[in-house]
Image (cartoon, rainbow, N blue to C red; front, side, top):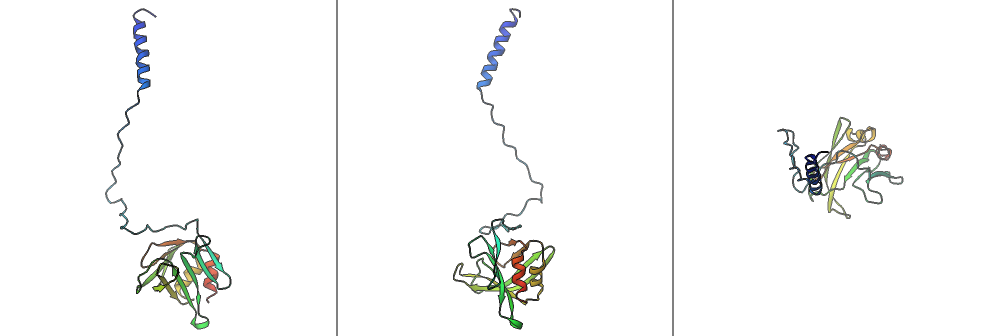
Length: 182
């Protein structure tokens, strides 16, 4: 090294030490502008987003005595039940969606699965467990809605007139509850 190169090397080395002790200034945040027309609509205030696939923490359970299929978290009262009320020609398949309903509410519960859909008339039903009123739908055991519940192999989305939609798996417990009503 020549005498002229030594001061340059020392100053370069000093510069490296100075820079090593400095923190880089953070880069400004980058923003991505959405393409017009592709942004999802915001959820209405106070409503939960619909569930588009079954919740893995929930399952169907069949009461072998009553043939009532209940879907929900383990050791709970469930969030949906399907069973039979009455017998013979008076038998009705009853679906209860345990989400709040107004005391005098009327409407339709919509079921959809694998490109098929069916509806059943629904009304508010008083409950002791809470909420005060839930949705109760009923249909004939040989109806399109009953066939959809018993025959589908794909998840079923249940939409009550109020409250979030619920997607449940097709299951043997559900099929047995529906066919026991026939």
